[in-house]
Amino acid sequence: MAQRQEQVIVVVGASRGIGRATALALADTGKRLFLAARSITDLDQVATLAQELGARVTPVACDVTSEVQVHQLLETAATTTGQIDVLVNSAGGAIVAPCHELTLADWERTLQVGLTGTFLTCKYALAHMPTGALIVNVASVASRQAFPNWSAYAAAKYGVLGFSNALREELRPRGIRVTVVFPAATDTALWDAIPGTWNRANMLQPEDVAQAIAGLIGQPAYVMTEELVIGHVIGRL
Image 1 (cartoon, rainbow, N blue to C red):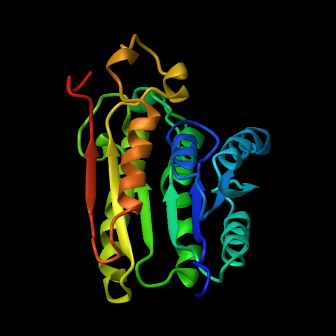
Image 2 (cartoon, rainbow, N blue to C red):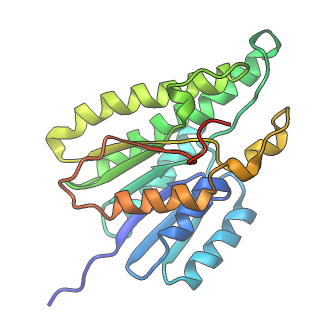
């Protein structure tokens, strides 16, 4: 009997927060993980933990705003089995301020990381994705709900939603699935730099979102979950 091929999974934004938790939630025997983020030091720590859980892991330093680096990441991932089975996009950041206080650099950086990076990873993964492959783009409830002072972040996340919806229809004939995940407020380092007082006890944990993503990956290849909204039972903060 032929040996079962490893499932090749690329997690972008894997050094912190939801991406890190997702990498660890997926780390078991039969998984070949390629973990990407800007900080190779942080990635190495996550990779060590994931390897202890049974996965084969390659950390790759990658700035998702660099087309060259993104292309190289996906080409490297595809060399293992000749294909990429799952792509999880979880890179992002938030600059929270009134619109008139945002600099052009703040605006452009937020869109480059949160939206353009998602476009680039999808673009270069698609050449290697077979029927039944899955793309999971982590957006936010801010993709649909308005929050004052979050205009740059909201624009990026609205963009991820629109891009994902169009991409899903484009890829249906190939049998490739696209899911958008909408987490509510999640207790990550993002909130350390956000002005104001936030009750982080009423936020999701990164592991909550990661388990939901793992569930999506475990679905049969013919099942298309288009959207998944995850929130705290208490509702909005």
